[in-house]
Image 1 (cartoon, rainbow, N blue to C red):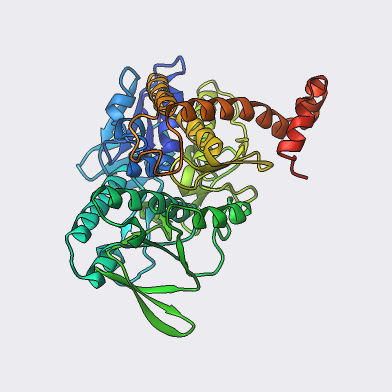
Image 2: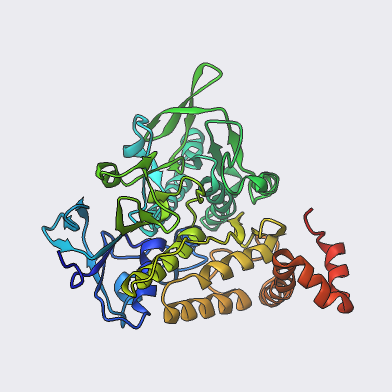
Length: 471
């Protein structure tokens, strides 16, 4: 059966799917490309905390697909995938549309899972999309307005308590953001920010357990205690039930209740259930792929991001991995059209980035150098904004962000409240971060070349005194 006339169909508009589509579109090829995604906006997940806080606005990190894809040759279809027939090379959607494909890219991502926790779906608020970030912001604002009008201390305490379930990166970044943000929001309403309580609830005692960021554990623990209000920890707590006003949990063989007006859930995700129906090998719901990201029994199909894994070299489900996978899939699809063999995907891990409060972060460059505080924050946001899809959008958003950083515009709080100086501090911090980051990145990535080329300047010795290299 001749498939050449059929389009390349991409399922899912997250990092892996969107960047596959964009890089395919940039190739000098007229082959049709169809991107199917159920949402109308792209959620830049690493920066959802900035969307929640107002440090960045929705057009920057929650743009519409039609705006991102304008001028490209990508056909965007907003629809939900109903079924995938790998043998017939066919995709069906809930609206009744049928798409036959020459090649398929599976990038359906993952779904929030509550692990069958009673009341989780009804009362816990997930945090994986721009829509959910905006919903959480409105909910928190409403709780603060309720609290300021409540004479009862007990009721006010409940309204001002936020429980975040899950001590992975998402939970930690969320509690750090809220512990800085909510006291300031409440102060602006005339309340006492010290009444705010942020509680991080975790099943084990270990934060970042099994995560690629686990070596940042000490840095993270210090940061959570050093917020506008310190984050409270509730560890070894197995959540058994969630209600409209609290979290029930088991700890030391006893049942307890944490009263909270807001419960945010960051405790886990599960692969898209559609993948479980496919006749291919899987590992905990993730499709097993070859080093080329192709399905072994269906080489015309690629899979990437949260829904795929390779047995010998598994990669963490992070934005930087999915971004590189998208580029690699586009290159391999081009090789297929040119009748060339596909090549294994080489993922370069460049370190990790975490948000640890308003205007504070940590950039762990190449897992060798940690840059903390405001310089870490600037490196983190600058790095992520450079990953924004679509060059024109990327350039516009990055220039807006840099202007806001330099002139301290569009901030959710006053800088004096955070103990920071305004305009001049922004310029000094941005300049210091840029000046410091460049040689640090070079030293971390290519230590021998860095030492040989810059020894005469004294820069290596200076940096060794300021920030000793990791051994």
